[in-house]
Length: 71
Image (spheres, rainbow, N blue to C red):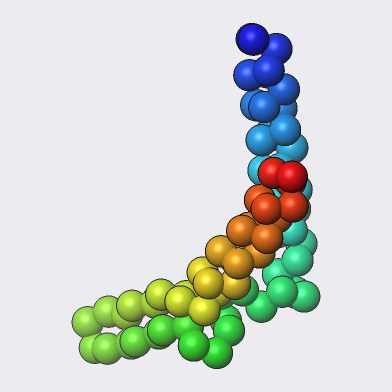
């Protein structure tokens, strides 16, 4: 049983490393955070930014990946 937890933690860590590389180096190719539909409001006293469409895209991609790996 402890080996299952260890394997799960190593897989989770590897996934985090891959996601980190994609976020860091893929910013030039993937315009996440700057898609049409992301909310950005600037005023005199501050600004507000909420990436609605980017969150939806990430959610759909993660859902598809979870369904592929769960089978």
